[in-house]
Length: 339
Ligand code: NAP
Image (cartoon, rainbow, N blue to C red; front, side):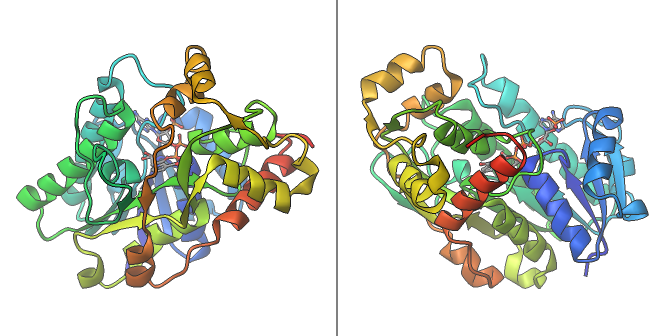
């Protein structure tokens, strides 16, 4: 049983929720941030009673500094930090290199410090791309890095593959597994929004007045964090080498809009009711970063099953409609969108 867990990327949407659940479950938590002076006050204000049970370390994915100190005394690592930008970078290496090097660095320092369990936050990005003939996927599928796969997809695929190869070659005794979330929504803590939540914000604040012909799988940040905690707690033989996709269900944007309209009727007037023609998405992609991401997904079904995760880790995902309602209500509560 782990007592102290290192969560990398404590400033992030998922990292914060993992820390939250670990503290609630009685663990001590170490976390890495890139700028301690800036981030520690924010983390302390979120967990004012954590005291010594929360320790904040400065460490960048691209440098060795701080990693030994962050891992010292830890039993398990949840390696969550990885670049997840809204826009497509100029060069794929801006994402691929920190994702891969950062994961290998985190693994090296963890094993050197005697950590026995390592959960990598991978992604459905490492599962469901580069297979034009397929529209249903599960934990056994791997993204095929064909030409044209977006840099973020490549970064997550390369990082997960590199981690698995490194463990096999260098630390076969380490209990390693990955959590592979689809698009993550759910309650937010403050106005520093993850790229995924930006999408819901734009659907309800009127910035996307028509629904693009695009679908995504929905998962709740509370379930993603729960999967990390359960993967740390489960018997080693249940999780070693596993992949745990978290995905409640696939929804088209228009279905997400319908769910929000039904469950949060105050927003009915702002949420799109009519489809956005594909040509308009392509035109808007010239100057709207989020449309650039959507452009390549028009009409695609990528239905990633999370059933394996529910079965092995023994819990049931929050219904997607509830997740969307909670996302919107939380954006309102924090003054990020106005009715
Ligand atoms: P997020 O809120 O943007 O968090 C990303 C975290 O990574 C931040 O703490 C960030 O630190 C850290 N980070 C980025 N580059 C770094 C670097 N060079 N050195 C150290 N830390 C760095 O995003 P998120 O949604 O929580 O995503 C967390 C993880 O989940 C990522 O691995 C992402 O690929 C994965 N994921 C997310 C989703 C989703 O829909 N949200 C879906 C599947 C997988 P700073 O605060 O310093 O920038």
